[in-house]
Image 1 (cartoon, helix red, strand yellow):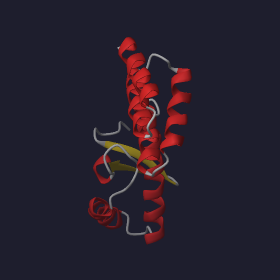
Image 2 (cartoon, rainbow, N blue to C red):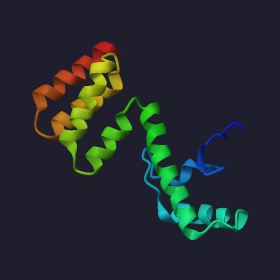
Image 3 (cartoon, one colour):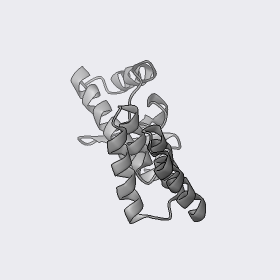
Length: 137
């Protein structure tokens, strides 16, 4: 089955559910409860045999799946952005550096690395990363 645009495919046992990307905080795998509520209600109505716990497990899987998809779509930058949002900027920098070791031509990752380096006060290194990103562009 083809996944409709704006959705991700999540498996829960033999059940396959198309989860709308709109229930997630933009650019993350974090589920926004207010956005997820109508989706959860629809799932409970469509599959009344699912317990509340089963629906929660389904959403946990959706969260993990969305994080993996975003990481693939952004060459790992979404994980770095999440780490930075959680206050783990130095870990995000290490993550970006490992990405750039594998793909040194990724100008978007160079730019993000530059932003994070400047954020922690390493402006010279940040500007160097920006420069490398421009050269790859």
